[in-house]
Length: 161
Image 1 (cartoon, helix red, strand yellow):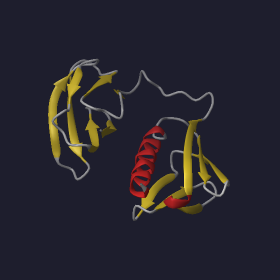
Image 2: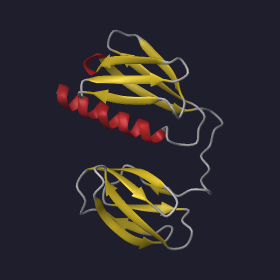
Image 3: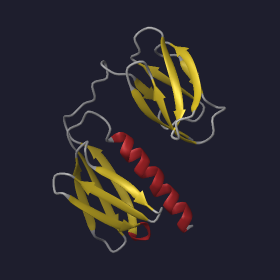
Image 4: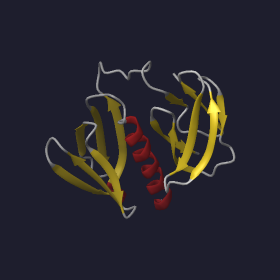
């Protein structure tokens, strides 16, 4: 059960990291601890959230120049929210939807037909294809994991479930 909880927190942190890669100037993350305490962070794009040894959540903020560490067993819940009034510029850059992905996804806002390459995190090219905006891209043959989707002008992060 503890391992399942840790995997869930890891997935939440990955999704949290993807959510904060938007053009927002700041976002809010709150960590709820088992002892009832709450820790709220106002995150900027240069801040980092990551795991050490799959047992410790690390939050590094550049504004306060702090690095806080939390044992996963002490965390009850993590919530994330974008800053109010900040929107992503959806017309300027491609959008990958849905993310996380099960079998297929769509890239929106492509300029005509573009070459799309999907890489594993270790740099291996997993797929390469020519696609147009709104075209369904099948990745059912790829294993579960994290991938980088590279268009002609941008690299996007993708989670395959």
